[in-house]
Image (cartoon, rainbow, N blue to C red; front, side, top):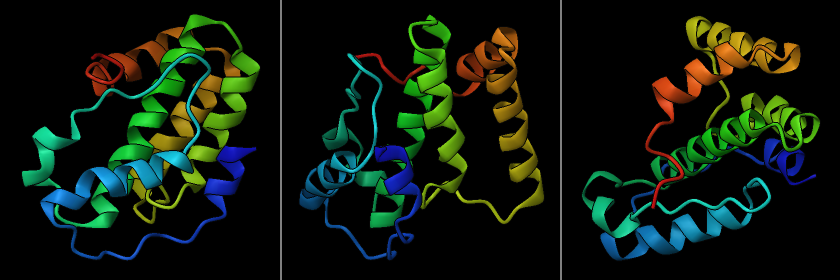
Length: 136
């Protein structure tokens, strides 16, 4: 499973990324990041090179946007078990690993909602933090 393989990867080094390299770095990270069937990320990397200066920032954004797409896929009901299996790995992904107690508790809350079928709570998370993900 691609989500588990990503969880086993080391965190990225925080190397500087020139503007011209943001897209290639993002594409390399996206190749190792799982996406739901029929869904892809249409983020305009070129329009955001000014705010992405390090490889870890690029990877973090790719991972977070993938998480959002999996939440949205889970909400469609197409394959909740499959989406839940991927979402269960997200807290272990290299840039999503948390040492902050508040963030860890938040991740557990979302995981509990997904595993328990709490559509309202998952929808709230998608609406609050993922509304711009998945739009061209």
